[in-house]
Image 1: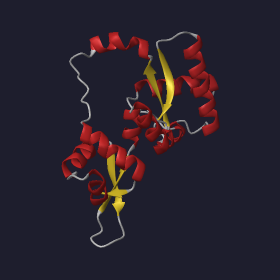
Image 2: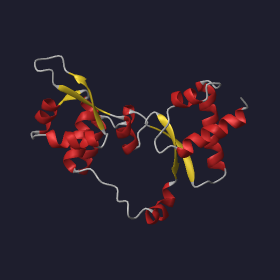
Image 3: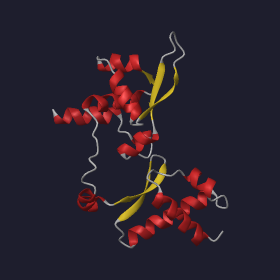
Length: 179
């Protein structure tokens, strides 16, 4: 396959996808190209977008790649989509997500022992929004469900991977400096 044509196909795939696309998925579609070549072509596209001053860029997020608009164009995009109000997460949902993201896989009882309140409703909401998923069952009496974060969680918070989460010590130091 001509690499220029392959790059155009990759650009089309990224353009039409509303979610980050994994290199592995692109490889399934473009069987003729290996993952290293696909990454090289994506890097070339990223450089082209940056050097030509386009209003969007290709970012690596949630272990995949996605075309996104640059932040300075947000005011006009918001006007276009003003009827679509992004639903925000409640304080209890954010608290629960933080616990899950740092302690996963974790059971509901473990979450509740940390939070000190019932978390059943919050967990259901997070499951419905696709931010967490059931990752299995704990090998103990009762075999409770284990929860963990999803690719949607990474996308929602703009993270490449869980390794991009701030370290617990960094959070404590930040909070300490604010008090």
